[in-house]
Length: 141
Ligand code: CO
Image 1: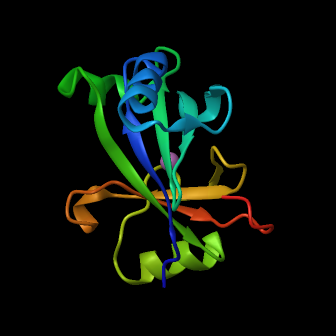
Image 2: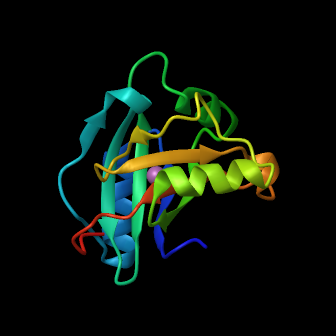
């Protein structure tokens, strides 16, 4: 069983521009400075919400998987949703047993919150790219 919604991933051609929009329109604030996540080919900035977070992601490097998304959605757009799970390996194995496809090698990678993550193929989840993230141990979102 999945846990809480950890974040909604939003792809953008410019984290700076998107941050301005969230700050100006909604009075929302970044949880910290943007940072690079080279393993995933993205630059990341989280925005804190009372009950969750928005993860702004911008392409990092030529091989970034976001280039294709932004070619189809030049102004950016909603990219994925991320649910917490207690144990990423148990969750992955359960998804596989139920016939879902894990993207990439199927081995968890370290995500933007420093805990292991996997992505499920959108064909198994109604067209929504789903990230599963092992929940941090000590209450940090
Ligand atoms: Co994410």
